[in-house]
Length: 474
Image 1: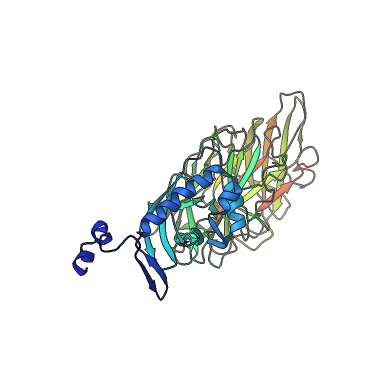
Image 2 (image 1 turned 60 degrees about the horizontal axis):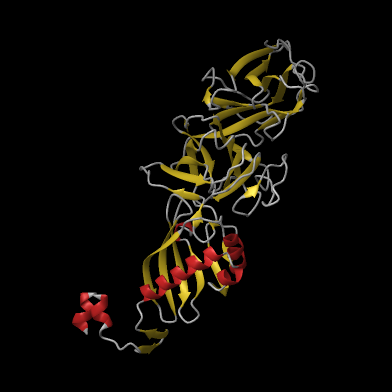
Protein backbone atom coordinates (compact mmCIF):
# COMPACT_ATOMS: atom_id res chain seq x y z
CA UNK A 1 0.00 0.00 0.00
CA UNK A 2 2.82 2.41 0.86
CA UNK A 3 4.48 1.93 -2.52
CA UNK A 4 1.15 2.33 -4.32
CA UNK A 5 0.28 5.55 -2.51
CA UNK A 6 3.73 6.96 -3.29
CA UNK A 7 3.07 6.49 -7.02
CA UNK A 8 0.19 9.03 -6.76
CA UNK A 9 -1.48 7.09 -9.58
CA UNK A 10 -5.28 7.33 -9.00
CA UNK A 11 -5.96 4.04 -10.81
CA UNK A 12 -3.39 2.08 -8.80
CA UNK A 13 -4.59 3.60 -5.53
CA UNK A 14 -8.21 2.85 -6.46
CA UNK A 15 -7.36 -0.84 -6.89
CA UNK A 16 -6.45 -1.01 -3.19
CA UNK A 17 -10.09 -0.66 -2.17
CA UNK A 18 -13.29 -2.60 -2.73
CA UNK A 19 -16.10 -0.71 -4.47
CA UNK A 20 -18.07 -0.73 -1.21
CA UNK A 21 -15.15 0.36 0.95
CA UNK A 22 -15.94 2.89 3.69
CA UNK A 23 -13.90 4.32 6.54
CA UNK A 24 -15.45 5.80 9.68
CA UNK A 25 -13.05 8.52 10.81
CA UNK A 26 -13.10 11.16 13.53
CA UNK A 27 -14.27 13.85 11.10
CA UNK A 28 -16.80 11.76 9.20
CA UNK A 29 -17.19 8.90 6.77
CA UNK A 30 -14.84 8.39 3.84
CA UNK A 31 -15.62 6.26 0.80
CA UNK A 32 -13.68 5.09 -2.24
CA UNK A 33 -14.99 7.72 -4.64
CA UNK A 34 -12.42 10.26 -5.75
CA UNK A 35 -13.30 13.74 -4.49
CA UNK A 36 -12.54 15.21 -7.92
CA UNK A 37 -15.13 12.91 -9.50
CA UNK A 38 -17.76 13.88 -6.93
CA UNK A 39 -17.16 17.59 -7.43
CA UNK A 40 -17.10 17.31 -11.22
CA UNK A 41 -20.50 15.61 -11.21
CA UNK A 42 -21.82 18.39 -9.00
CA UNK A 43 -20.38 21.10 -11.29
CA UNK A 44 -22.05 19.48 -14.30
CA UNK A 45 -25.30 19.49 -12.36
CA UNK A 46 -24.78 23.13 -11.41
CA UNK A 47 -24.44 24.16 -15.06
CA UNK A 48 -27.62 22.31 -16.01
CA UNK A 49 -29.50 23.80 -13.06
CA UNK A 50 -28.48 27.39 -13.82
CA UNK A 51 -29.31 26.98 -17.50
CA UNK A 52 -32.77 25.67 -16.58
CA UNK A 53 -33.65 28.98 -14.88
CA UNK A 54 -35.97 26.94 -12.66
CA UNK A 55 -35.82 28.46 -9.18
CA UNK A 56 -36.69 25.19 -7.45
CA UNK A 57 -33.89 23.36 -9.28
CA UNK A 58 -31.36 26.12 -8.62
CA UNK A 59 -32.40 26.19 -4.96
CA UNK A 60 -31.44 22.54 -4.65
CA UNK A 61 -27.79 23.45 -5.20
CA UNK A 62 -27.52 25.20 -1.83
CA UNK A 63 -28.11 24.29 1.78
CA UNK A 64 -30.61 26.54 3.63
CA UNK A 65 -27.81 28.25 5.58
CA UNK A 66 -25.52 28.71 2.57
CA UNK A 67 -23.44 31.90 2.64
CA UNK A 68 -20.99 33.28 0.11
CA UNK A 69 -18.27 35.68 1.24
CA UNK A 70 -18.03 37.94 -1.80
CA UNK A 71 -16.17 41.11 -2.52
CA UNK A 72 -18.95 43.34 -1.26
CA UNK A 73 -20.13 41.33 1.70
CA UNK A 74 -21.93 38.13 2.64
CA UNK A 75 -24.59 36.70 0.31
CA UNK A 76 -27.17 34.22 1.56
CA UNK A 77 -29.07 31.63 -0.44
CA UNK A 78 -31.98 33.92 -1.25
CA UNK A 79 -29.81 36.67 -2.69
CA UNK A 80 -27.71 34.23 -4.74
CA UNK A 81 -30.81 32.66 -6.29
CA UNK A 82 -32.20 36.12 -7.09
CA UNK A 83 -28.95 37.02 -8.87
CA UNK A 84 -28.88 33.77 -10.81
CA UNK A 85 -32.40 34.40 -12.08
CA UNK A 86 -31.14 37.59 -13.77
CA UNK A 87 -28.43 35.80 -15.75
CA UNK A 88 -28.98 36.71 -19.44
CA UNK A 89 -30.29 33.81 -21.50
CA UNK A 90 -27.59 32.24 -23.64
CA UNK A 91 -24.69 33.24 -21.41
CA UNK A 92 -21.87 30.74 -21.93
CA UNK A 93 -20.06 29.93 -18.71
CA UNK A 94 -17.94 27.12 -17.34
CA UNK A 95 -16.65 25.75 -14.05
CA UNK A 96 -13.18 24.17 -14.16
CA UNK A 97 -12.11 22.22 -11.11
CA UNK A 98 -8.65 23.19 -9.87
CA UNK A 99 -8.34 21.11 -6.71
CA UNK A 100 -10.40 19.26 -4.11
CA UNK A 101 -9.88 17.99 -0.60
CA UNK A 102 -12.07 15.38 1.09
CA UNK A 103 -12.58 16.46 4.71
CA UNK A 104 -14.90 13.61 5.68
CA UNK A 105 -18.50 14.78 5.56
CA UNK A 106 -17.73 17.43 2.96
CA UNK A 107 -15.35 18.33 0.14
CA UNK A 108 -13.54 21.64 -0.06
CA UNK A 109 -12.75 22.55 -3.66
CA UNK A 110 -11.31 25.37 -5.72
CA UNK A 111 -12.84 26.20 -9.09
CA UNK A 112 -12.00 28.51 -12.00
CA UNK A 113 -15.11 30.21 -13.38
CA UNK A 114 -15.15 31.75 -16.85
CA UNK A 115 -17.64 33.12 -19.33
CA UNK A 116 -19.07 35.99 -17.31
CA UNK A 117 -16.05 38.22 -17.86
CA UNK A 118 -12.91 38.33 -19.96
CA UNK A 119 -10.91 37.11 -16.98
CA UNK A 120 -11.34 34.01 -14.86
CA UNK A 121 -12.51 34.12 -11.25
CA UNK A 122 -11.08 31.74 -8.65
CA UNK A 123 -13.55 30.70 -5.94
CA UNK A 124 -13.62 28.17 -3.11
CA UNK A 125 -16.68 26.17 -2.05
CA UNK A 126 -17.55 23.48 0.50
CA UNK A 127 -19.80 20.70 -0.81
CA UNK A 128 -21.77 18.51 1.60
CA UNK A 129 -21.15 14.94 0.39
CA UNK A 130 -24.37 13.47 1.74
CA UNK A 131 -26.82 16.17 0.63
CA UNK A 132 -24.86 17.17 -2.50
CA UNK A 133 -25.46 20.81 -1.66
CA UNK A 134 -23.10 23.74 -1.15
CA UNK A 135 -22.51 24.71 2.47
CA UNK A 136 -20.52 27.90 1.86
CA UNK A 137 -18.27 29.70 -0.59
CA UNK A 138 -15.77 32.53 -0.88
CA UNK A 139 -13.64 34.46 -3.35
CA UNK A 140 -10.14 34.44 -1.82
CA UNK A 141 -8.99 37.52 -3.73
CA UNK A 142 -11.70 39.56 -2.00
CA UNK A 143 -10.96 38.55 1.56
CA UNK A 144 -8.89 40.71 3.97
CA UNK A 145 -5.20 41.07 3.05
CA UNK A 146 -5.77 39.29 -0.27
CA UNK A 147 -5.78 42.41 -2.39
CA UNK A 148 -4.96 46.02 -1.77
CA UNK A 149 -7.49 47.42 -4.21
CA UNK A 150 -10.48 45.13 -3.76
CA UNK A 151 -13.00 43.88 -6.25
CA UNK A 152 -16.69 44.74 -6.02
CA UNK A 153 -19.50 42.27 -5.30
CA UNK A 154 -19.95 39.01 -7.13
CA UNK A 155 -21.97 38.86 -10.31
CA UNK A 156 -24.02 35.70 -9.85
CA UNK A 157 -21.74 32.99 -8.47
CA UNK A 158 -18.70 33.84 -10.46
CA UNK A 159 -18.55 37.09 -12.39
CA UNK A 160 -16.73 40.03 -10.88
CA UNK A 161 -17.04 43.58 -12.18
CA UNK A 162 -13.54 44.52 -11.04
CA UNK A 163 -10.46 42.41 -11.69
CA UNK A 164 -6.86 43.22 -10.87
CA UNK A 165 -4.87 42.44 -14.01
CA UNK A 166 -1.27 41.63 -14.66
CA UNK A 167 0.50 44.87 -15.39
CA UNK A 168 2.10 45.42 -12.01
CA UNK A 169 5.36 47.22 -11.48
CA UNK A 170 7.28 47.83 -8.29
CA UNK A 171 5.21 50.94 -7.58
CA UNK A 172 2.02 50.85 -9.70
CA UNK A 173 -0.71 48.38 -10.53
CA UNK A 174 -3.29 48.54 -13.29
CA UNK A 175 -6.79 47.32 -12.46
CA UNK A 176 -10.16 47.32 -14.17
CA UNK A 177 -13.72 48.09 -13.15
CA UNK A 178 -16.35 46.94 -15.66
CA UNK A 179 -20.07 46.66 -16.12
CA UNK A 180 -20.98 42.98 -15.60
CA UNK A 181 -22.66 42.25 -18.92
CA UNK A 182 -25.55 44.74 -18.73
CA UNK A 183 -28.12 45.10 -21.52
CA UNK A 184 -29.00 48.81 -21.29
CA UNK A 185 -32.04 50.67 -22.55
CA UNK A 186 -31.69 53.94 -24.47
CA UNK A 187 -30.72 56.94 -22.33
CA UNK A 188 -29.98 54.83 -19.28
CA UNK A 189 -27.54 55.74 -16.52
CA UNK A 190 -26.17 52.62 -14.84
CA UNK A 191 -23.80 52.42 -11.87
CA UNK A 192 -21.64 49.70 -10.35
CA UNK A 193 -19.39 50.08 -7.33
CA UNK A 194 -16.05 48.97 -5.97
CA UNK A 195 -15.27 48.61 -2.27
CA UNK A 196 -11.74 49.69 -1.41
CA UNK A 197 -9.46 48.03 1.10
CA UNK A 198 -8.10 49.42 4.34
CA UNK A 199 -4.82 50.11 2.55
CA UNK A 200 -4.61 53.61 1.08
CA UNK A 201 -4.18 53.78 -2.68
CA UNK A 202 -3.43 56.67 -5.00
CA UNK A 203 -5.04 56.73 -8.44
CA UNK A 204 -2.64 58.06 -11.05
CA UNK A 205 -4.11 57.15 -14.45
CA UNK A 206 -7.33 56.32 -16.28
CA UNK A 207 -8.20 54.64 -19.56
CA UNK A 208 -11.70 54.01 -20.93
CA UNK A 209 -12.49 50.45 -22.03
CA UNK A 210 -15.22 51.30 -24.53
CA UNK A 211 -15.99 53.53 -27.52
CA UNK A 212 -18.31 56.47 -28.12
CA UNK A 213 -20.54 54.14 -30.14
CA UNK A 214 -21.30 52.22 -26.96
CA UNK A 215 -21.09 54.72 -24.09
CA UNK A 216 -22.00 58.39 -24.31
CA UNK A 217 -19.90 59.15 -21.26
CA UNK A 218 -18.37 57.60 -18.13
CA UNK A 219 -18.02 59.25 -14.73
CA UNK A 220 -15.97 57.86 -11.85
CA UNK A 221 -17.05 58.97 -8.39
CA UNK A 222 -15.45 58.57 -4.99
CA UNK A 223 -17.98 57.81 -2.24
CA UNK A 224 -17.98 57.01 1.44
CA UNK A 225 -20.84 54.59 0.67
CA UNK A 226 -22.36 53.69 -2.71
CA UNK A 227 -25.92 54.69 -3.48
CA UNK A 228 -26.96 51.03 -3.56
CA UNK A 229 -25.72 47.63 -2.46
CA UNK A 230 -26.92 46.09 -5.73
CA UNK A 231 -24.45 44.86 -8.33
CA UNK A 232 -25.82 47.36 -10.86
CA UNK A 233 -28.42 50.06 -10.34
CA UNK A 234 -30.19 52.84 -12.23
CA UNK A 235 -28.44 56.03 -11.11
CA UNK A 236 -29.99 58.47 -13.59
CA UNK A 237 -31.71 60.72 -11.09
CA UNK A 238 -33.14 63.03 -13.77
CA UNK A 239 -34.10 60.55 -16.48
CA UNK A 240 -36.99 58.10 -16.84
CA UNK A 241 -36.72 55.20 -14.35
CA UNK A 242 -35.81 51.72 -15.59
CA UNK A 243 -38.59 49.49 -14.25
CA UNK A 244 -36.32 46.42 -14.26
CA UNK A 245 -33.47 48.05 -12.36
CA UNK A 246 -33.29 49.29 -8.74
CA UNK A 247 -33.01 53.08 -8.66
CA UNK A 248 -30.66 54.98 -6.35
CA UNK A 249 -28.19 57.91 -6.41
CA UNK A 250 -24.55 57.38 -7.29
CA UNK A 251 -23.38 57.76 -3.69
CA UNK A 252 -25.04 57.43 -0.31
CA UNK A 253 -23.70 60.88 0.59
CA UNK A 254 -22.04 63.69 -1.35
CA UNK A 255 -20.09 62.26 -4.31
CA UNK A 256 -16.62 63.37 -5.37
CA UNK A 257 -15.99 63.33 -9.11
CA UNK A 258 -12.61 61.77 -9.87
CA UNK A 259 -12.63 61.26 -13.64
CA UNK A 260 -14.84 61.76 -16.69
CA UNK A 261 -14.64 60.45 -20.27
CA UNK A 262 -16.56 60.87 -23.55
CA UNK A 263 -16.16 60.95 -27.35
CA UNK A 264 -13.24 58.48 -27.54
CA UNK A 265 -10.98 60.60 -25.35
CA UNK A 266 -7.48 59.10 -24.96
CA UNK A 267 -6.06 57.81 -21.64
CA UNK A 268 -5.12 60.27 -18.91
CA UNK A 269 -1.92 60.09 -16.89
CA UNK A 270 -1.61 62.43 -13.93
CA UNK A 271 1.56 64.50 -13.45
CA UNK A 272 4.45 63.05 -11.49
CA UNK A 273 3.87 62.87 -7.73
CA UNK A 274 0.11 63.55 -8.09
CA UNK A 275 -2.65 61.08 -7.17
CA UNK A 276 -6.25 60.77 -5.99
CA UNK A 277 -6.15 59.42 -2.42
CA UNK A 278 -8.67 56.61 -1.87
CA UNK A 279 -9.24 53.84 0.67
CA UNK A 280 -7.50 53.69 4.03
CA UNK A 281 -8.28 56.70 6.22
CA UNK A 282 -9.59 58.80 3.33
CA UNK A 283 -13.27 59.71 2.92
CA UNK A 284 -13.41 57.65 -0.27
CA UNK A 285 -14.22 54.06 0.70
CA UNK A 286 -15.90 53.09 -2.57
CA UNK A 287 -15.50 53.89 -6.24
CA UNK A 288 -18.70 54.17 -8.28
CA UNK A 289 -18.60 54.05 -12.07
CA UNK A 290 -21.54 55.61 -13.89
CA UNK A 291 -22.07 54.87 -17.58
CA UNK A 292 -24.53 56.83 -19.71
CA UNK A 293 -25.80 54.67 -22.56
CA UNK A 294 -27.31 56.94 -25.21
CA UNK A 295 -28.62 53.99 -27.22
CA UNK A 296 -30.06 50.62 -26.25
CA UNK A 297 -27.95 47.48 -26.64
CA UNK A 298 -28.99 43.95 -27.56
CA UNK A 299 -25.77 42.26 -26.45
CA UNK A 300 -24.38 42.33 -22.88
CA UNK A 301 -21.96 45.22 -22.42
CA UNK A 302 -18.80 45.32 -20.30
CA UNK A 303 -17.84 48.99 -20.59
CA UNK A 304 -15.29 49.93 -17.97
CA UNK A 305 -12.21 51.81 -16.87
CA UNK A 306 -8.61 50.75 -16.48
CA UNK A 307 -7.20 52.46 -13.40
CA UNK A 308 -3.53 52.85 -12.53
CA UNK A 309 -2.96 52.98 -8.77
CA UNK A 310 -0.15 52.71 -6.26
CA UNK A 311 0.22 52.22 -2.51
CA UNK A 312 3.17 54.60 -2.51
CA UNK A 313 1.98 57.91 -0.99
CA UNK A 314 1.94 60.78 -3.48
CA UNK A 315 3.10 64.16 -2.12
CA UNK A 316 0.44 66.05 -4.11
CA UNK A 317 -3.23 65.13 -3.69
CA UNK A 318 -5.55 65.43 -6.69
CA UNK A 319 -9.23 66.38 -6.95
CA UNK A 320 -11.67 67.38 -9.68
CA UNK A 321 -13.98 70.38 -9.51
CA UNK A 322 -17.15 70.51 -11.62
CA UNK A 323 -18.71 73.76 -12.81
CA UNK A 324 -22.22 73.10 -14.12
CA UNK A 325 -25.39 75.01 -15.01
CA UNK A 326 -29.10 74.50 -15.37
CA UNK A 327 -31.19 76.57 -17.74
CA UNK A 328 -33.04 76.46 -21.05
CA UNK A 329 -31.73 76.84 -24.60
CA UNK A 330 -34.45 78.63 -26.63
CA UNK A 331 -35.54 77.31 -30.01
CA UNK A 332 -33.51 78.59 -32.97
CA UNK A 333 -31.28 80.75 -30.76
CA UNK A 334 -27.67 81.01 -29.62
CA UNK A 335 -27.31 81.31 -25.85
CA UNK A 336 -24.56 81.46 -23.22
CA UNK A 337 -24.79 79.50 -19.98
CA UNK A 338 -22.63 80.86 -17.17
CA UNK A 339 -21.68 79.90 -13.63
CA UNK A 340 -19.33 81.42 -11.05
CA UNK A 341 -18.31 80.48 -7.51
CA UNK A 342 -15.97 82.01 -4.95
CA UNK A 343 -13.41 79.73 -3.32
CA UNK A 344 -14.27 79.91 0.38
CA UNK A 345 -12.00 77.17 1.73
CA UNK A 346 -8.44 77.84 2.88
CA UNK A 347 -6.68 75.93 0.13
CA UNK A 348 -4.22 76.59 -2.69
CA UNK A 349 -5.27 74.78 -5.88
CA UNK A 350 -2.87 74.06 -8.74
CA UNK A 351 -4.98 73.33 -11.86
CA UNK A 352 -3.22 71.02 -14.31
CA UNK A 353 -6.00 69.79 -16.62
CA UNK A 354 -9.52 70.69 -17.69
CA UNK A 355 -12.34 69.02 -19.61
CA UNK A 356 -15.47 70.27 -21.33
CA UNK A 357 -18.77 68.48 -21.87
CA UNK A 358 -21.98 69.33 -23.70
CA UNK A 359 -24.28 67.43 -25.99
CA UNK A 360 -24.58 68.17 -29.71
CA UNK A 361 -25.60 71.85 -29.42
CA UNK A 362 -22.43 72.98 -27.65
CA UNK A 363 -20.08 75.22 -29.65
CA UNK A 364 -17.54 76.44 -27.10
CA UNK A 365 -16.89 75.87 -23.40
CA UNK A 366 -14.44 78.01 -21.44
CA UNK A 367 -13.31 78.39 -17.86
CA UNK A 368 -11.68 81.39 -16.17
CA UNK A 369 -10.00 82.34 -12.92
CA UNK A 370 -11.15 85.78 -11.71
CA UNK A 371 -9.23 87.85 -9.18
CA UNK A 372 -10.54 91.17 -7.87
CA UNK A 373 -8.12 93.97 -7.05
CA UNK A 374 -8.46 96.68 -4.39
CA UNK A 375 -10.49 98.87 -6.74
CA UNK A 376 -13.03 96.08 -7.29
CA UNK A 377 -11.76 95.57 -10.82
CA UNK A 378 -11.90 91.97 -12.04
CA UNK A 379 -8.89 90.38 -13.74
CA UNK A 380 -9.67 87.31 -15.86
CA UNK A 381 -7.21 84.52 -16.64
CA UNK A 382 -8.13 81.71 -19.01
CA UNK A 383 -8.05 78.22 -17.50
CA UNK A 384 -9.01 76.58 -20.76
CA UNK A 385 -11.29 76.85 -23.79
CA UNK A 386 -12.35 74.01 -26.09
CA UNK A 387 -14.86 72.87 -28.70
CA UNK A 388 -16.96 70.25 -26.85
CA UNK A 389 -17.55 68.33 -30.08
CA UNK A 390 -13.88 67.29 -30.07
CA UNK A 391 -12.87 64.21 -28.04
CA UNK A 392 -13.83 65.15 -24.50
CA UNK A 393 -10.48 64.48 -22.89
CA UNK A 394 -8.71 66.21 -20.03
CA UNK A 395 -6.20 68.58 -21.61
CA UNK A 396 -3.49 70.75 -19.98
CA UNK A 397 -4.56 74.14 -18.62
CA UNK A 398 -3.48 77.30 -20.43
CA UNK A 399 -1.06 78.31 -17.64
CA UNK A 400 0.57 75.49 -15.69
CA UNK A 401 1.83 77.90 -12.99
CA UNK A 402 -1.67 79.19 -12.21
CA UNK A 403 -2.88 78.97 -8.60
CA UNK A 404 -6.41 79.39 -7.25
CA UNK A 405 -6.76 80.55 -3.65
CA UNK A 406 -9.34 81.48 -1.06
CA UNK A 407 -11.26 84.56 -2.22
CA UNK A 408 -10.69 83.88 -5.92
CA UNK A 409 -13.59 83.11 -8.23
CA UNK A 410 -13.78 80.26 -10.75
CA UNK A 411 -16.15 80.63 -13.67
CA UNK A 412 -17.33 78.71 -16.71
CA UNK A 413 -19.35 79.53 -19.83
CA UNK A 414 -20.94 77.31 -22.48
CA UNK A 415 -21.99 78.80 -25.80
CA UNK A 416 -24.71 76.75 -27.48
CA UNK A 417 -26.71 77.05 -30.69
CA UNK A 418 -30.16 75.53 -31.04
CA UNK A 419 -31.22 74.94 -34.65
CA UNK A 420 -34.34 73.05 -33.60
CA UNK A 421 -37.93 74.27 -33.27
CA UNK A 422 -38.11 73.37 -29.58
CA UNK A 423 -36.70 74.71 -26.35
CA UNK A 424 -34.04 72.43 -24.86
CA UNK A 425 -33.52 72.11 -21.11
CA UNK A 426 -30.30 71.27 -19.32
CA UNK A 427 -30.76 67.69 -18.16
CA UNK A 428 -29.61 64.08 -18.21
CA UNK A 429 -31.13 62.58 -21.35
CA UNK A 430 -29.85 62.66 -24.91
CA UNK A 431 -32.66 65.04 -25.82
CA UNK A 432 -31.48 67.51 -23.17
CA UNK A 433 -28.28 69.54 -23.05
CA UNK A 434 -25.45 69.82 -20.54
CA UNK A 435 -22.98 72.56 -19.66
CA UNK A 436 -20.02 71.10 -17.75
CA UNK A 437 -16.50 72.38 -17.16
CA UNK A 438 -14.14 70.17 -15.11
CA UNK A 439 -10.97 71.41 -13.40
CA UNK A 440 -8.50 68.77 -12.26
CA UNK A 441 -6.09 70.18 -9.67
CA UNK A 442 -3.59 69.22 -7.01
CA UNK A 443 -2.80 70.59 -3.56
CA UNK A 444 0.06 70.23 -1.10
CA UNK A 445 -2.43 69.50 1.68
CA UNK A 446 -6.06 68.48 1.81
CA UNK A 447 -8.23 69.06 -1.25
CA UNK A 448 -11.46 71.06 -1.08
CA UNK A 449 -14.48 69.48 0.57
CA UNK A 450 -16.94 71.10 -1.85
CA UNK A 451 -15.90 70.61 -5.46
CA UNK A 452 -19.14 71.59 -7.23
CA UNK A 453 -20.10 75.00 -8.59
CA UNK A 454 -23.68 75.33 -9.87
CA UNK A 455 -25.84 78.12 -11.28
CA UNK A 456 -29.40 78.09 -12.68
CA UNK A 457 -28.04 79.15 -16.07
CA UNK A 458 -29.78 81.12 -18.80
CA UNK A 459 -32.00 83.05 -18.77
CA UNK A 460 -31.98 83.45 -14.96
CA UNK A 461 -28.25 83.78 -14.32
CA UNK A 462 -25.64 86.10 -15.87
CA UNK A 463 -22.06 86.85 -14.85
CA UNK A 464 -22.58 90.60 -15.02
CA UNK A 465 -25.85 90.55 -13.12
CA UNK A 466 -26.09 87.79 -10.48
CA UNK A 467 -22.30 87.40 -10.01
CA UNK A 468 -21.63 91.15 -10.32
CA UNK A 469 -18.52 90.57 -12.43
CA UNK A 470 -16.92 93.22 -14.65
CA UNK A 471 -14.48 93.28 -17.57
CA UNK A 472 -16.13 90.11 -18.84
CA UNK A 473 -14.29 88.57 -21.82
CA UNK A 474 -16.13 88.24 -25.12
